[in-house]
Length: 122
Image 1 (cartoon, rainbow, N blue to C red):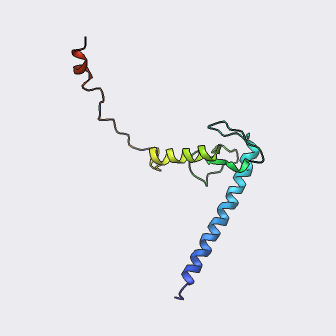
Image 2: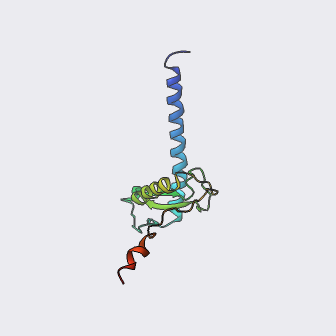
Image 3: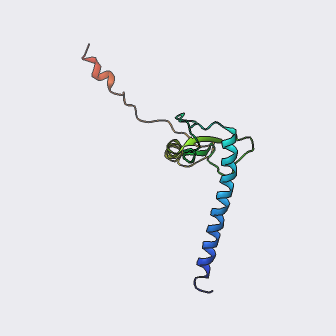
């Protein structure tokens, strides 16, 4: 194996992946900007051509490869709301998109001793 050859191959693969992502993004971004008004879907901030770069396309199912032609998986969000949405998704969902997640009941009861505390206050 030639030293540096694997590094060049890796750099080539990464560069191609970035080009493909930009091409894919360009396609669905342009379509969504034609479909929807230039307003953030969360905070209702309006955008013009001057600040349109701050309006992003959010994938509702968090799958950037799911780009139906009708735009049903897209939502326009400002940079701040988009960041907030992804932060909430990773914190609450843990990045798990499975619909069969197991829910556990809460075990802590914050009002467990409230009755005893109120008995002498009548």
